[in-house]
Length: 256
Image 1 (tube, rainbow, N blue to C red):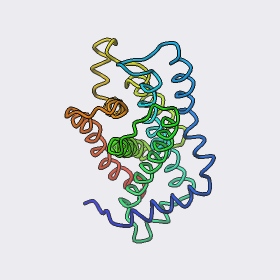
Image 2 (spheres, rainbow, N blue to C red):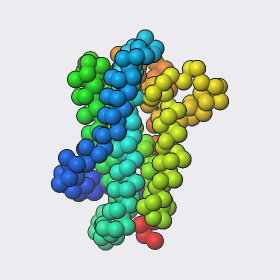
Image 3 (cartoon, rainbow, N blue to C red):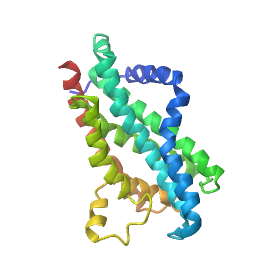
Image 4 (cartoon, rainbow, N blue to C red):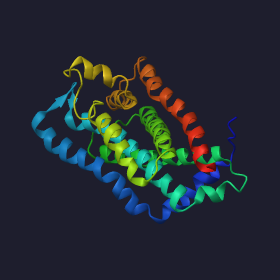
């Protein structure tokens, strides 16, 4: 039986306090690659190729980059950050002798991964706004922020599952190389998928990130239509399943 409580907040707050000590270098690292893509490809390459789907390439790319910034922040926080706290700092071993349950620890870590995703998403939105390609409708902006948090939840949960059976920190390179990188390139972030082979388009429909990018792109164009709810469910349902699997697997790892 799941033993979740308000103590999730204390796990989250502990990570926040630690994060404040290294906020500047951490932000630079998490934003470096997405910002590079946005400026080098969006501004540089975009000046040559025009645009896709009726919008400039810079806006097309920005709608995907805001999602991958959330993906990277949540993923690396719940891979490397969680592993270091669990294995090297022995933080979880100390927490389980308090009223904090194993489930509280895992949920708190995932909540922190969502927070990191939210921070990165907000910063990328500000950059896109500065470049003149971000939506300004308040309702659309709120929906975009909720989407970023949802991406953080989904990929924090996936990453926590990987962390639950990682024998050492180098193991994460398998996950990032075999799962994150292919998904990164075939989710419609850099180019439309409509000209790709049918097998690629079909495979992409099973990738949660693809649905997040579709929603983000619609929001950047300030076009909200009923079918977006199905894309949101296709994003969120795998995350909910992964969340409960992560609770079970991480509990076994912590008490082992």
